[in-house]
Length: 65
Image (cartoon, rainbow, N blue to C red):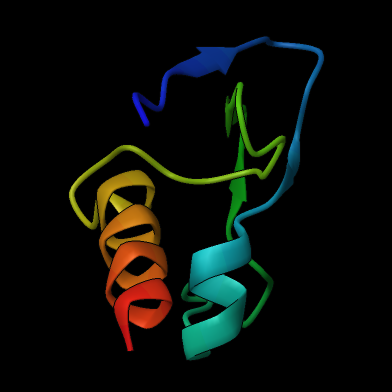
């Protein structure tokens, strides 16, 4: 499966992976991103933490168990 991401300035949602591991901004708010996986339709960061990659690695690992 080849995941691809897409972004839009009009699309701001909470990063699903950040929310699942409890990551917040310095002010305590949820991390918002303009990026999402086209195939999964899930909002994911692609910055330093690169939740896009971590989410899909975790998804693959869990499906193999």
